[in-house]
Length: 262
Ligand code: FPP
Image 1 (spheres, rainbow, N blue to C red):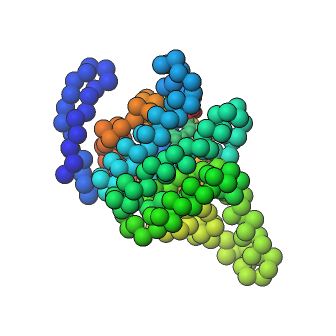
Image 2: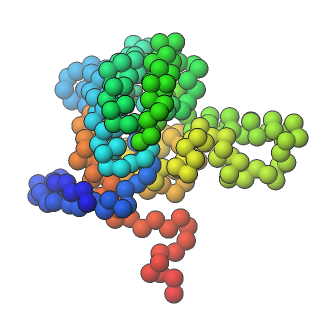
Image 3: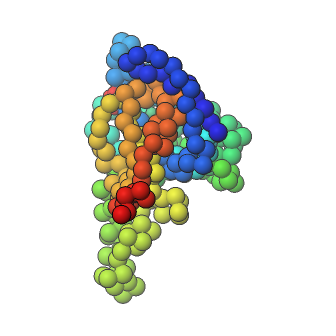
């Protein structure tokens, strides 16, 4: 049984809360938002927020792994983020180099395997190398999968999957009626996660309550938790609070609650 100290944001009251270790979400996905605002509040350049955000990734990856999360997917760079000023884009492209350059030994120590989803062939060569080296260096780890969405977009992912299926139909390998949930699922970038493709819990930091083109297909039945903290302030306790909130929900997947069947 995991326990943590929860501080009520309005009253300041602190109480001990217990997490049910039999109900830890297997796949947690996070939209890491608010790096820029965190920096702005401190009169720092936006990239200072991204740098602190990278440190938060280290803290949260370790915390999630310790709690027994099986897949942690992090939205690190979207297909729309190229629209940002080039200095910021360049910095964001350098972050994986710094992150994996310093953190791979810890990932191996914690048995964490790196996976990346997105259009990685469009990333700068140094970023691709850092990512590919990290994947190779952690390939034998059997614990949590740390899945970075890098140059990822949910609609583009679905478009690519549909194109692939259309090609298979054209080649006579598939008929139109063979295209079902499972067929689409196996063409998405989460296909290799097998039974853990869909997030159980989706967290977005920084008070915004939208999906921003993230895992549109996979979050069909995810529980959403929105937190006020900016990503650089997110920590182990914040993750535990989000999981606690998840554990208070009743997931029905379109059916009825067990006490509501009469
Ligand atoms: C959103 O905040 C954040 C991003 C677009 C980048 C997220 C990247 C990290 C947290 C570091 C990733 C680390 C690795 C290892 C790849 P924002 O800039 O949109 O914040 P704002 O809404 O306050 O401006």
